Image 1 (cartoon, one colour):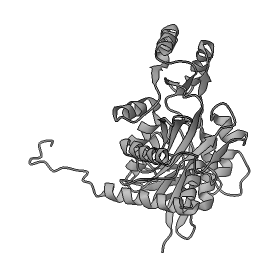
Image 2 (cartoon, one colour):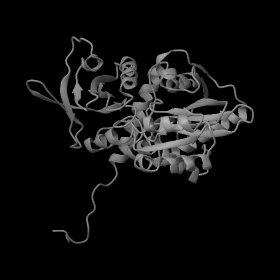
Image 3 (cartoon, one colour):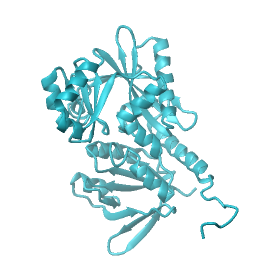
Image 4 (cartoon, helix red, strand yellow):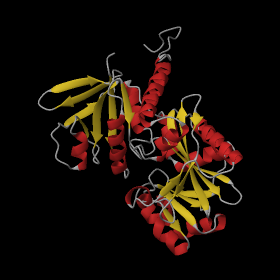
Length: 370
């Protein structure tokens, strides 16, 4: 059987650029070479696209024996990746694994380009990706559907610059310290701070505003367990067993996730059976709420004594190394890493087939537009 040309896109214009490189390295190594012909596609921090076997080393600033040619994905509904060096070459892609975390990748932008190009791709579509990325919009959606989430307020950076005292007054009227300050559109805990008082709040907000014009201030759920669940599927998704993150710092910040190597996890999480099942149900409900496809990791906060559950957020392209929580949770549920990657590509092809059979034109009774 002819191997499927599968593009793996990584890097990107995001504060999560480095995380993407690590995730993609693991995926490229684990994809079944009997079925897939891997086409590495890298995006620099400046937004330039490259293709070739040397792209990963190129983005990491390392010497490479392989090529890294400039490239562009053609939005012509033929799945064409155009690369050039001295000449030009068009590669038709059978599927794409967009291993991009954060803005300009996980937020629906690249998904829209892939839709225009007519290429099947792993993961959520434009709407689900953008909904999950925007913490303000997704929390409003969850609340409207009765899904539990922590109290919050949000504001634009322009308002903060004009009325910092007024916003602080609103925060202190609605929430109690400590609170979390988050860019509305970012992941990997980039730009997230915990404020225990007014001074820390005033210091943290401008730092979060470096990453987004919308800022979310959320009630901290003190002494809560950080619980994660992996969801897999299209219209009939399934949830893995839950796992608990035990952060090395006060909360699961960027250093605790990727740098110091001291955080731990407990799989499965030590929870009563009814709480476990409730969390798995909520994970699937939230995935369906955004019209998710393929995969997402759903994060919860659960109080230790009373087991109150708060839906925190969905990550539509979570960290994907072999030791990341998304694949580890599925491995503990009975689905191995390489098999998981193959299943995700199959789900992408399944969804693309359904979408391709939809009508894209309408014939009116009269040619009134001519």
